Amino acid sequence: MKSDWSTGQTRRKFAGSSAVTLSTMLAGLPALQGQEKPFSGAVEDQSTVAQFTFGEIYNREETRQLLKPSRDLLGPPTTRVGLPFWWDKQAKQLVNPTNLTFDTSIKPSDYQFSASVLNFRASQREVGDVWSKLTNNAQLNINPGSVSSEGDPLQWIVMTGINVAQSVFSKDGQLIPLSQNNKPTDSLRPAETVTFKKGICTIGITLSAQRKQSIWDKLLSAVKTFAGSPIFGMLPIPKLYQTAIQSVTASLSQLQTQSNLIKILGGNSYGYKLYKGANSDADLTFRPGHWVLLNSEFAAAHMDSKSNLSGIYLDIPGLLYQLKDSNNQVVDTTYAVVNLDLIRASS
Image (tube, rainbow, N blue to C red; front, top):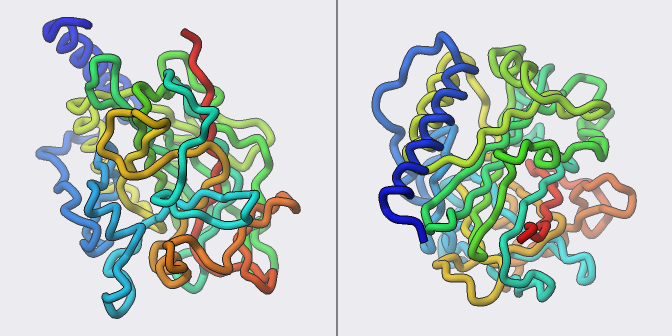
């Protein structure tokens, strides 16, 4: 175990290098004074939730309110965020993570995290003319987190830009499937690789859009690209200690004021355990496989008595990765489909 002094030096090293890297990329942006208002609860109106909530994690009560909303409450939820559901291919059901059991193949160890973006969609009915007039791109942010060997909280940020043009809309307004070469975590340098330690992880996924070309395009176009993929840019920000998270969040928020991103699905990260015995307060269980992040209002309206989704299915056999109802009709709601996997880290 490292001493408090060496741990502090490590924190400052990561915080300093991350801040320098970001300030280089965002050269010329004025400094943002102060810190963001933290997310105060799951029932807060979406319009007041910060665009970038890196490092913010739902607590037990917030997680319960979102994933197991009370049926005694009348009317729709007062906030719309993204809810995660795991696709059980055997039962052909989208399962609420509060109901998941541990994957017996995941043994106590360190695990590297892998993510593939398979599809995304924003309902024209929900987003209105914002989505129908979108001619540029959407942005999917993946925010995994864990702890260091000393137990200090760590976060990573993977920001991807996804090309959106009129050609990706069919006559009914659906987005065509993405190509299969969309694995933003697979090309990370060793220093950027996401590693979950001690059986603890947090994962947040958010979806935003832009109406026209902006500084976000220039930023993402200047970094990593994927040949033959709709993902045109990927900005990985390496693991960050809490002090660096605040600095990075402030810089990105300042950028947001200059070139607005339209939030489609927001929210904080959810906490998970990877295997039995992990020392964590998280109530959710993570299992590798296909995960769907979808509009919480839609999800709440389609939950069964166990809070799993009823009558909503993920169409994988056709490799469309679309949500369909019991009549095999495409569902009109906002969602993203990602494949999340764990690779046991070398000892």
